[in-house]
Image 1 (cartoon, rainbow, N blue to C red):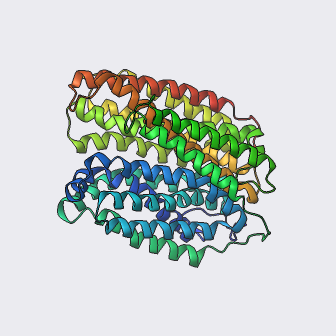
Image 2: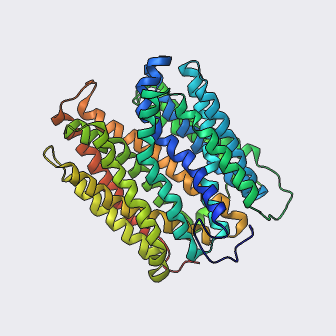
Image 3: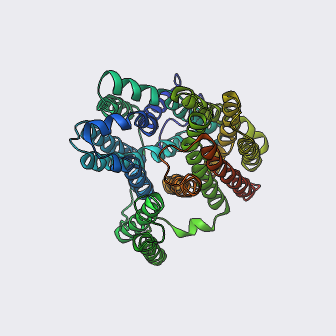
Amino acid sequence: MATDTAATSVGLRSERGPILLSLMLSTSLVALDSTIIATAVLTIVGDLGGFSQFPWLFSVYLLAQAVSVPIYGKLADMFGRKPIMLLGIALFAAGSVLCGLAWSMPALIVFRAIQGLGAGAVQPMSLTIAGDIYTVAERARVQGYIASVWGMSSVLGPTLGGVFSEFLSWRWIFLINVPLCALAAWMLMRKFAEKTITQKRRIDYLGAALLTGGASAMILGLLEGGQSWEWLSPMGIGTFVVSAMLLVGFVFVERRADDPILPLHMLTRRVLVASSLVSLWVGAILMGLTSYVPTFVQGVLGTGALVAGFALAVLTIGWPIAASLAGRLYLRVGFRTTALIGSTLALVGTALLVLLTEGSPVWQVGATCFVIGSGMGLIATPTLIAAQSSVDWSERGVVTSTNMFARSIGSAVGVAVFGALVNSRVGDAAEPDPGGLADAIQLVFLGLLGIAALLAASSALMPRAEK
Protein backbone atom coordinates (compact mmCIF):
# COMPACT_ATOMS: atom_id res chain seq x y z
CA MET A 1 0.00 0.00 0.00
CA ALA A 2 1.09 3.61 -0.46
CA THR A 3 2.93 5.42 2.27
CA ASP A 4 1.93 8.49 4.26
CA THR A 5 -1.33 7.02 5.51
CA ALA A 6 -0.42 8.04 9.05
CA ALA A 7 -1.14 11.69 8.33
CA THR A 8 -4.63 12.60 9.43
CA SER A 9 -5.08 15.98 7.75
CA VAL A 10 -6.86 16.23 4.43
CA GLY A 11 -6.46 19.05 1.95
CA LEU A 12 -4.06 20.56 -0.56
CA ARG A 13 -1.81 21.99 2.19
CA SER A 14 -1.51 18.72 4.07
CA GLU A 15 1.34 16.22 3.82
CA ARG A 16 -0.53 14.31 1.13
CA GLY A 17 -1.70 17.51 -0.55
CA PRO A 18 0.70 17.30 -3.54
CA ILE A 19 -0.59 13.80 -4.32
CA LEU A 20 -4.19 15.02 -4.09
CA LEU A 21 -3.37 17.95 -6.37
CA SER A 22 -1.80 15.55 -8.86
CA LEU A 23 -4.97 13.42 -8.81
CA MET A 24 -7.09 16.55 -9.35
CA LEU A 25 -4.91 17.65 -12.27
CA SER A 26 -5.11 14.18 -13.79
CA THR A 27 -8.88 14.12 -13.39
CA SER A 28 -9.10 17.57 -14.99
CA LEU A 29 -7.65 16.08 -18.18
CA VAL A 30 -10.62 13.74 -18.57
CA ALA A 31 -13.17 16.25 -17.24
CA LEU A 32 -12.11 19.11 -19.49
CA ASP A 33 -11.88 16.89 -22.54
CA SER A 34 -15.45 15.71 -22.05
CA THR A 35 -16.80 19.28 -22.31
CA ILE A 36 -14.25 21.44 -24.14
CA ILE A 37 -14.76 19.86 -27.57
CA ALA A 38 -18.54 20.32 -27.63
CA THR A 39 -18.41 24.02 -28.52
CA ALA A 40 -15.77 23.52 -31.25
CA VAL A 41 -17.38 20.83 -33.38
CA LEU A 42 -18.56 23.16 -36.14
CA THR A 43 -15.16 24.88 -36.26
CA ILE A 44 -13.35 21.53 -36.53
CA VAL A 45 -15.71 20.36 -39.28
CA GLY A 46 -15.21 23.64 -41.13
CA ASP A 47 -11.47 23.02 -41.16
CA LEU A 48 -11.24 19.25 -41.65
CA GLY A 49 -14.61 18.44 -43.25
CA GLY A 50 -16.41 15.17 -42.49
CA PHE A 51 -19.59 16.52 -40.89
CA SER A 52 -21.24 13.08 -41.04
CA GLN A 53 -18.29 11.58 -39.16
CA PHE A 54 -18.03 14.05 -36.28
CA PRO A 55 -20.23 11.99 -33.85
CA TRP A 56 -17.36 9.49 -33.85
CA LEU A 57 -15.22 12.09 -32.07
CA PHE A 58 -17.38 11.37 -29.02
CA SER A 59 -18.25 7.72 -29.68
CA VAL A 60 -14.71 6.43 -30.22
CA TYR A 61 -13.44 8.25 -27.12
CA LEU A 62 -16.16 6.72 -24.94
CA LEU A 63 -15.65 3.31 -26.53
CA ALA A 64 -11.87 3.25 -25.99
CA GLN A 65 -12.23 4.51 -22.43
CA ALA A 66 -14.93 2.01 -21.47
CA VAL A 67 -13.31 -1.17 -22.82
CA SER A 68 -9.89 -0.39 -21.37
CA VAL A 69 -11.01 0.41 -17.80
CA PRO A 70 -11.36 -3.20 -16.52
CA ILE A 71 -7.98 -4.17 -17.98
CA TYR A 72 -6.22 -1.23 -16.35
CA GLY A 73 -7.86 -2.12 -13.05
CA LYS A 74 -6.44 -5.63 -13.12
CA LEU A 75 -3.00 -4.42 -14.20
CA ALA A 76 -3.01 -1.90 -11.33
CA ASP A 77 -3.67 -4.68 -8.83
CA MET A 78 -0.77 -6.64 -10.34
CA PHE A 79 1.86 -3.95 -10.87
CA GLY A 80 0.72 -1.02 -8.73
CA ARG A 81 -1.31 2.13 -9.35
CA LYS A 82 1.54 4.52 -10.08
CA PRO A 83 2.89 2.91 -13.30
CA ILE A 84 -0.61 2.46 -14.72
CA MET A 85 -1.52 6.05 -13.89
CA LEU A 86 1.66 7.32 -15.55
CA LEU A 87 0.94 5.15 -18.58
CA GLY A 88 -2.54 6.65 -18.83
CA ILE A 89 -1.19 10.20 -18.57
CA ALA A 90 1.42 9.44 -21.25
CA LEU A 91 -1.19 7.98 -23.62
CA PHE A 92 -3.50 10.93 -23.03
CA ALA A 93 -0.66 13.39 -23.72
CA ALA A 94 0.37 11.55 -26.90
CA GLY A 95 -3.23 11.43 -28.10
CA SER A 96 -3.64 15.15 -27.37
CA VAL A 97 -0.54 16.08 -29.38
CA LEU A 98 -1.69 13.94 -32.29
CA CYS A 99 -5.21 15.42 -32.15
CA GLY A 100 -3.69 18.89 -32.26
CA LEU A 101 -1.77 17.92 -35.40
CA ALA A 102 -4.61 16.02 -37.10
CA TRP A 103 -4.89 16.62 -40.86
CA SER A 104 -8.27 14.98 -41.50
CA MET A 105 -11.40 13.86 -39.69
CA PRO A 106 -10.49 10.12 -39.87
CA ALA A 107 -7.05 10.91 -38.39
CA LEU A 108 -8.63 12.97 -35.60
CA ILE A 109 -11.01 10.11 -34.82
CA VAL A 110 -8.12 7.63 -34.51
CA PHE A 111 -6.19 10.01 -32.27
CA ARG A 112 -9.28 10.53 -30.09
CA ALA A 113 -9.25 6.77 -29.53
CA ILE A 114 -5.69 7.08 -28.17
CA GLN A 115 -6.90 9.80 -25.83
CA GLY A 116 -9.71 7.50 -24.71
CA LEU A 117 -7.23 4.73 -23.91
CA GLY A 118 -5.38 7.18 -21.68
CA ALA A 119 -8.58 8.35 -19.99
CA GLY A 120 -9.46 4.71 -19.31
CA ALA A 121 -6.49 4.56 -16.94
CA VAL A 122 -6.52 8.09 -15.50
CA GLN A 123 -10.06 8.25 -14.13
CA PRO A 124 -10.22 4.94 -12.19
CA MET A 125 -6.60 5.18 -11.03
CA SER A 126 -7.25 8.61 -9.50
CA LEU A 127 -10.08 7.15 -7.43
CA THR A 128 -8.11 3.99 -6.59
CA ILE A 129 -5.05 5.92 -5.37
CA ALA A 130 -7.34 8.10 -3.23
CA GLY A 131 -8.82 4.90 -1.80
CA ASP A 132 -5.31 3.64 -0.99
CA ILE A 133 -3.86 6.64 0.80
CA TYR A 134 -6.92 7.94 2.67
CA THR A 135 -9.04 6.30 5.35
CA VAL A 136 -12.77 5.71 5.01
CA ALA A 137 -13.42 8.76 7.18
CA GLU A 138 -11.23 10.93 4.95
CA ARG A 139 -12.28 9.67 1.54
CA ALA A 140 -15.58 11.53 1.17
CA ARG A 141 -13.87 14.88 1.65
CA VAL A 142 -11.15 13.84 -0.80
CA GLN A 143 -13.79 12.68 -3.29
CA GLY A 144 -15.34 16.12 -2.88
CA TYR A 145 -12.07 17.70 -4.02
CA ILE A 146 -11.91 15.38 -7.03
CA ALA A 147 -15.60 15.87 -7.83
CA SER A 148 -15.11 19.65 -7.73
CA VAL A 149 -12.85 19.29 -10.76
CA TRP A 150 -15.87 18.12 -12.76
CA GLY A 151 -17.89 21.08 -11.54
CA MET A 152 -15.22 23.58 -12.57
CA SER A 153 -14.67 21.82 -15.88
CA SER A 154 -18.37 21.98 -16.75
CA VAL A 155 -18.05 25.78 -16.65
CA LEU A 156 -14.50 26.21 -17.96
CA GLY A 157 -14.65 23.56 -20.68
CA PRO A 158 -17.27 25.06 -23.01
CA THR A 159 -15.89 28.55 -22.37
CA LEU A 160 -12.30 27.60 -23.23
CA GLY A 161 -13.51 25.64 -26.25
CA GLY A 162 -15.33 28.68 -27.57
CA VAL A 163 -12.41 31.04 -26.88
CA PHE A 164 -9.85 28.78 -28.53
CA SER A 165 -12.07 28.16 -31.55
CA GLU A 166 -12.93 31.83 -32.07
CA PHE A 167 -9.71 33.62 -31.20
CA LEU A 168 -6.88 31.08 -31.57
CA SER A 169 -7.35 27.65 -33.14
CA TRP A 170 -9.41 24.58 -32.29
CA ARG A 171 -6.11 22.68 -32.12
CA TRP A 172 -5.36 24.36 -28.78
CA ILE A 173 -8.35 22.49 -27.34
CA PHE A 174 -6.12 19.42 -27.40
CA LEU A 175 -2.67 21.00 -27.04
CA ILE A 176 -3.67 22.66 -23.74
CA ASN A 177 -3.65 19.15 -22.23
CA VAL A 178 0.09 18.71 -22.72
CA PRO A 179 1.36 21.02 -19.92
CA LEU A 180 -1.35 19.67 -17.59
CA CYS A 181 -0.18 16.12 -18.31
CA ALA A 182 3.44 17.04 -17.70
CA LEU A 183 2.68 18.76 -14.39
CA ALA A 184 0.44 15.93 -13.12
CA ALA A 185 3.02 13.26 -14.03
CA TRP A 186 5.88 15.23 -12.47
CA MET A 187 4.06 15.73 -9.18
CA LEU A 188 2.97 12.09 -9.06
CA MET A 189 6.50 10.80 -9.69
CA ARG A 190 8.01 13.08 -7.04
CA LYS A 191 5.42 12.82 -4.27
CA PHE A 192 3.70 9.45 -4.56
CA ALA A 193 5.80 6.63 -3.08
CA GLU A 194 4.01 3.33 -3.54
CA LYS A 195 4.85 0.03 -1.90
CA THR A 196 3.40 -2.98 -3.66
CA ILE A 197 3.65 -6.69 -3.02
CA THR A 198 5.49 -8.12 -6.00
CA GLN A 199 3.92 -11.36 -7.17
CA LYS A 200 4.46 -13.37 -10.30
CA ARG A 201 1.12 -13.58 -12.03
CA ARG A 202 0.06 -14.69 -15.46
CA ILE A 203 -1.80 -12.07 -17.44
CA ASP A 204 -5.14 -13.33 -18.69
CA TYR A 205 -4.63 -12.24 -22.32
CA LEU A 206 -7.51 -14.32 -23.70
CA GLY A 207 -9.96 -13.00 -21.12
CA ALA A 208 -8.81 -9.43 -21.78
CA ALA A 209 -9.25 -9.88 -25.55
CA LEU A 210 -12.74 -11.38 -25.19
CA LEU A 211 -13.87 -8.68 -22.75
CA THR A 212 -12.50 -5.90 -24.97
CA GLY A 213 -14.08 -7.36 -28.10
CA GLY A 214 -17.44 -8.11 -26.47
CA ALA A 215 -17.74 -4.77 -24.72
CA SER A 216 -16.58 -2.91 -27.85
CA ALA A 217 -19.22 -4.60 -30.00
CA MET A 218 -21.95 -3.93 -27.44
CA ILE A 219 -21.08 -0.26 -26.92
CA LEU A 220 -20.62 0.22 -30.67
CA GLY A 221 -24.05 -1.25 -31.30
CA LEU A 222 -25.63 0.98 -28.65
CA LEU A 223 -23.88 4.14 -29.81
CA GLU A 224 -24.40 3.70 -33.55
CA GLY A 225 -27.70 1.80 -33.67
CA GLY A 226 -30.34 4.02 -35.22
CA GLN A 227 -27.57 6.43 -36.30
CA SER A 228 -25.15 4.73 -38.69
CA TRP A 229 -27.48 1.79 -39.32
CA GLU A 230 -31.02 0.67 -38.52
CA TRP A 231 -31.58 -1.25 -35.27
CA LEU A 232 -33.07 -4.26 -37.06
CA SER A 233 -30.64 -4.24 -40.00
CA PRO A 234 -28.15 -7.12 -40.43
CA MET A 235 -25.42 -4.84 -39.08
CA GLY A 236 -27.52 -3.76 -36.10
CA ILE A 237 -28.47 -7.31 -35.10
CA GLY A 238 -25.10 -8.82 -35.99
CA THR A 239 -23.22 -6.40 -33.74
CA PHE A 240 -25.13 -7.55 -30.67
CA VAL A 241 -24.90 -11.23 -31.66
CA VAL A 242 -21.12 -10.95 -31.91
CA SER A 243 -21.02 -9.09 -28.58
CA ALA A 244 -23.07 -11.78 -26.85
CA MET A 245 -20.90 -14.59 -28.24
CA LEU A 246 -17.68 -12.91 -27.13
CA LEU A 247 -19.01 -12.10 -23.64
CA VAL A 248 -20.29 -15.66 -23.15
CA GLY A 249 -16.84 -16.88 -24.16
CA PHE A 250 -15.34 -14.43 -21.67
CA VAL A 251 -17.41 -15.90 -18.82
CA PHE A 252 -16.28 -19.45 -19.66
CA VAL A 253 -12.63 -18.37 -19.83
CA GLU A 254 -12.80 -16.43 -16.56
CA ARG A 255 -14.30 -19.40 -14.72
CA ARG A 256 -11.23 -21.46 -15.59
CA ALA A 257 -8.48 -18.84 -15.51
CA ASP A 258 -5.90 -19.04 -12.71
CA ASP A 259 -5.76 -15.25 -12.44
CA PRO A 260 -8.80 -13.79 -14.25
CA ILE A 261 -8.83 -10.25 -15.57
CA LEU A 262 -12.23 -9.73 -13.88
CA PRO A 263 -12.81 -12.18 -11.03
CA LEU A 264 -16.39 -13.42 -11.34
CA HIS A 265 -16.63 -14.16 -7.63
CA MET A 266 -16.95 -10.41 -7.09
CA LEU A 267 -20.43 -10.62 -8.59
CA THR A 268 -21.46 -12.68 -5.56
CA ARG A 269 -20.71 -9.84 -3.13
CA ARG A 270 -23.80 -7.78 -2.46
CA VAL A 271 -22.04 -4.48 -1.87
CA LEU A 272 -20.09 -4.77 -5.14
CA VAL A 273 -23.15 -5.70 -7.20
CA ALA A 274 -25.22 -2.89 -5.67
CA SER A 275 -22.49 -0.26 -6.16
CA SER A 276 -22.01 -1.30 -9.81
CA LEU A 277 -25.76 -1.08 -10.45
CA VAL A 278 -25.81 2.37 -8.87
CA SER A 279 -22.94 3.43 -11.14
CA LEU A 280 -24.79 2.03 -14.17
CA TRP A 281 -27.87 4.16 -13.49
CA VAL A 282 -25.78 7.22 -12.59
CA GLY A 283 -24.10 6.98 -16.00
CA ALA A 284 -27.46 6.81 -17.77
CA ILE A 285 -28.91 9.76 -15.84
CA LEU A 286 -25.85 11.92 -16.45
CA MET A 287 -25.92 11.19 -20.17
CA GLY A 288 -29.60 12.07 -20.40
CA LEU A 289 -29.13 15.34 -18.53
CA THR A 290 -25.98 16.50 -20.33
CA SER A 291 -27.46 15.64 -23.72
CA TYR A 292 -30.97 17.06 -23.41
CA VAL A 293 -31.14 19.73 -20.68
CA PRO A 294 -29.16 22.25 -22.81
CA THR A 295 -31.24 21.27 -25.85
CA PHE A 296 -34.45 21.89 -23.88
CA VAL A 297 -33.29 25.25 -22.54
CA GLN A 298 -32.01 26.41 -25.92
CA GLY A 299 -34.50 24.83 -28.33
CA VAL A 300 -37.69 24.95 -26.24
CA LEU A 301 -37.20 27.91 -23.90
CA GLY A 302 -35.41 29.91 -26.60
CA THR A 303 -32.28 30.99 -24.74
CA GLY A 304 -28.71 31.25 -26.00
CA ALA A 305 -26.03 28.58 -25.72
CA LEU A 306 -24.37 30.30 -22.74
CA VAL A 307 -27.55 30.26 -20.64
CA ALA A 308 -28.21 26.66 -21.66
CA GLY A 309 -24.73 25.68 -20.51
CA PHE A 310 -25.23 27.49 -17.22
CA ALA A 311 -28.42 25.54 -16.51
CA LEU A 312 -26.48 22.30 -16.87
CA ALA A 313 -23.48 23.62 -14.91
CA VAL A 314 -25.68 23.88 -11.83
CA LEU A 315 -25.93 20.08 -11.92
CA THR A 316 -22.19 19.66 -11.54
CA ILE A 317 -22.02 22.38 -8.90
CA GLY A 318 -24.48 20.53 -6.68
CA TRP A 319 -22.59 17.24 -7.08
CA PRO A 320 -19.24 18.23 -5.46
CA ILE A 321 -20.97 20.21 -2.72
CA ALA A 322 -22.99 17.13 -1.73
CA ALA A 323 -20.02 14.81 -2.19
CA SER A 324 -17.94 16.91 0.23
CA LEU A 325 -20.70 16.61 2.85
CA ALA A 326 -21.33 12.91 2.28
CA GLY A 327 -18.48 11.84 4.56
CA ARG A 328 -20.02 13.32 7.67
CA LEU A 329 -23.33 11.77 6.74
CA TYR A 330 -22.23 8.20 6.04
CA LEU A 331 -20.05 8.13 9.16
CA ARG A 332 -23.18 8.90 11.18
CA VAL A 333 -25.87 6.89 9.38
CA GLY A 334 -23.94 4.45 7.16
CA PHE A 335 -23.36 4.04 3.43
CA ARG A 336 -26.78 2.54 2.67
CA THR A 337 -28.85 5.27 4.34
CA THR A 338 -26.73 8.00 2.73
CA ALA A 339 -27.22 6.39 -0.69
CA LEU A 340 -30.98 6.16 -0.09
CA ILE A 341 -31.12 9.87 0.80
CA GLY A 342 -29.19 10.67 -2.38
CA SER A 343 -31.38 8.49 -4.58
CA THR A 344 -34.50 10.09 -3.05
CA LEU A 345 -33.19 13.52 -4.02
CA ALA A 346 -32.47 12.25 -7.54
CA LEU A 347 -35.98 10.82 -7.72
CA VAL A 348 -37.53 14.11 -6.60
CA GLY A 349 -35.35 16.06 -9.04
CA THR A 350 -36.25 13.91 -12.05
CA ALA A 351 -39.94 14.16 -11.08
CA LEU A 352 -39.55 17.96 -11.17
CA LEU A 353 -38.01 17.62 -14.65
CA VAL A 354 -41.21 16.03 -15.90
CA LEU A 355 -43.13 19.12 -14.75
CA LEU A 356 -41.10 21.47 -16.99
CA THR A 357 -43.04 23.05 -19.87
CA GLU A 358 -42.45 25.54 -22.68
CA GLY A 359 -43.31 28.33 -20.25
CA SER A 360 -40.94 27.27 -17.46
CA PRO A 361 -38.30 29.84 -16.40
CA VAL A 362 -34.64 28.93 -16.78
CA TRP A 363 -34.06 29.21 -13.03
CA GLN A 364 -36.52 26.35 -12.51
CA VAL A 365 -34.45 24.12 -14.80
CA GLY A 366 -31.28 25.11 -12.94
CA ALA A 367 -32.85 24.48 -9.52
CA THR A 368 -34.05 21.06 -10.67
CA CYS A 369 -30.58 20.16 -11.93
CA PHE A 370 -29.10 21.28 -8.61
CA VAL A 371 -31.41 18.90 -6.72
CA ILE A 372 -30.43 16.00 -9.00
CA GLY A 373 -26.73 16.88 -8.74
CA SER A 374 -26.96 16.94 -4.96
CA GLY A 375 -28.51 13.49 -5.03
CA MET A 376 -25.76 12.20 -7.31
CA GLY A 377 -23.10 13.50 -4.91
CA LEU A 378 -24.71 11.68 -2.00
CA ILE A 379 -25.04 8.37 -3.81
CA ALA A 380 -22.09 8.02 -6.21
CA THR A 381 -19.31 8.71 -3.70
CA PRO A 382 -20.56 6.65 -0.71
CA THR A 383 -21.37 3.57 -2.81
CA LEU A 384 -17.92 3.64 -4.45
CA ILE A 385 -16.20 4.07 -1.07
CA ALA A 386 -18.28 1.22 0.37
CA ALA A 387 -17.16 -1.02 -2.49
CA GLN A 388 -13.50 -0.01 -2.11
CA SER A 389 -13.62 -0.57 1.65
CA SER A 390 -15.00 -4.09 1.26
CA VAL A 391 -11.86 -5.45 -0.44
CA ASP A 392 -8.13 -5.53 0.17
CA TRP A 393 -5.49 -3.51 -1.69
CA SER A 394 -4.95 -6.36 -4.16
CA GLU A 395 -8.53 -6.11 -5.46
CA ARG A 396 -9.25 -2.41 -5.06
CA GLY A 397 -8.12 -1.51 -8.58
CA VAL A 398 -10.45 -4.06 -10.16
CA VAL A 399 -13.36 -2.96 -7.96
CA THR A 400 -12.92 0.72 -8.79
CA SER A 401 -12.49 0.02 -12.50
CA THR A 402 -15.55 -2.24 -12.58
CA ASN A 403 -17.53 0.62 -11.05
CA MET A 404 -16.28 3.02 -13.74
CA PHE A 405 -16.94 0.43 -16.45
CA ALA A 406 -20.55 0.13 -15.29
CA ARG A 407 -20.93 3.91 -15.54
CA SER A 408 -19.58 3.86 -19.11
CA ILE A 409 -22.04 1.13 -20.06
CA GLY A 410 -24.84 3.18 -18.50
CA SER A 411 -23.78 6.20 -20.55
CA ALA A 412 -23.76 4.16 -23.76
CA VAL A 413 -27.20 2.72 -23.03
CA GLY A 414 -28.44 6.21 -22.18
CA VAL A 415 -27.22 7.56 -25.53
CA ALA A 416 -29.09 4.82 -27.40
CA VAL A 417 -32.34 4.82 -25.42
CA PHE A 418 -32.77 8.59 -25.15
CA GLY A 419 -31.79 9.12 -28.77
CA ALA A 420 -34.38 6.56 -29.87
CA LEU A 421 -37.05 8.27 -27.72
CA VAL A 422 -36.36 11.68 -29.23
CA ASN A 423 -36.16 10.37 -32.80
CA SER A 424 -39.53 8.65 -32.34
CA ARG A 425 -41.14 12.10 -31.99
CA VAL A 426 -39.08 14.50 -34.10
CA GLY A 427 -38.11 12.06 -36.87
CA ASP A 428 -35.66 13.44 -39.42
CA ALA A 429 -36.54 17.10 -38.92
CA ALA A 430 -33.42 19.24 -39.14
CA GLU A 431 -34.92 21.93 -36.89
CA PRO A 432 -37.97 20.61 -35.01
CA ASP A 433 -40.43 23.21 -33.74
CA PRO A 434 -40.30 24.01 -30.01
CA GLY A 435 -43.54 22.17 -29.35
CA GLY A 436 -42.45 18.98 -31.04
CA LEU A 437 -39.04 19.20 -29.37
CA ALA A 438 -40.68 19.75 -25.98
CA ASP A 439 -42.82 16.62 -26.46
CA ALA A 440 -39.75 14.59 -27.50
CA ILE A 441 -37.60 15.70 -24.56
CA GLN A 442 -40.53 15.10 -22.22
CA LEU A 443 -40.11 11.41 -23.09
CA VAL A 444 -36.46 11.65 -22.04
CA PHE A 445 -37.44 13.25 -18.74
CA LEU A 446 -39.96 10.45 -18.12
CA GLY A 447 -37.21 7.93 -18.91
CA LEU A 448 -34.93 9.65 -16.40
CA LEU A 449 -37.64 9.39 -13.78
CA GLY A 450 -37.87 5.64 -14.39
CA ILE A 451 -34.09 5.24 -14.15
CA ALA A 452 -34.06 7.26 -10.92
CA ALA A 453 -36.54 4.72 -9.52
CA LEU A 454 -34.12 1.94 -10.48
CA LEU A 455 -31.35 3.94 -8.81
CA ALA A 456 -33.34 4.04 -5.58
CA ALA A 457 -33.98 0.30 -5.77
CA SER A 458 -30.27 -0.39 -6.31
CA SER A 459 -29.41 1.78 -3.31
CA ALA A 460 -31.77 -0.29 -1.21
CA LEU A 461 -29.74 -3.39 -2.21
CA MET A 462 -26.72 -2.02 -0.33
CA PRO A 463 -26.08 -4.13 2.80
CA ARG A 464 -26.95 -2.50 6.10
CA ALA A 465 -23.62 -3.36 7.67
CA GLU A 466 -20.58 -2.30 5.61
CA LYS A 467 -16.97 -3.04 6.25
